[in-house]
Image (tube, rainbow, N blue to C red; front, side):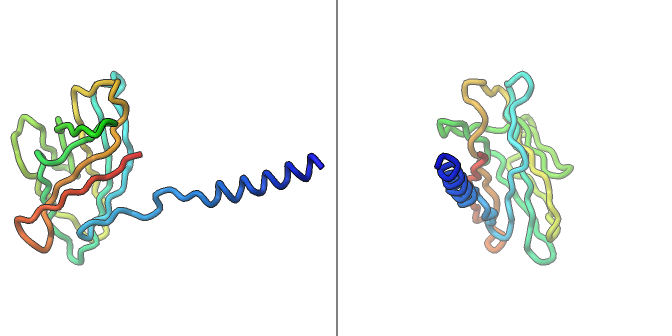
Length: 152
């Protein structure tokens, strides 16, 4: 009887675990797929680092224009923090550069890494929960899209 109960519970547990589904749907905004690669804190815990992959599905490629001052990392309380550096491919902007926009040409179906670092991060804030990206709409110049990406 115990063996039968154990078998039934194991089967039910297997169906429950199998039925759980993570965030299987990729986040696609304006023909750009955004995937989370890694979220970490530096060894000393004073810098939050978020690594993303961006993939453009627009035929022939597109210019990606990121508003750096409107983008940032969000902590567990929902408070946004400005970056200390943003790097996309080989293009890197630091806060001291005072550049409002990062321009990058994205080729079709070619993943590009986007890394956002925020210095002066406090350990009590834990790992970043979200990242906010603000970039120009590919169909309407001057219109910006604000996207919040869940990291966990």
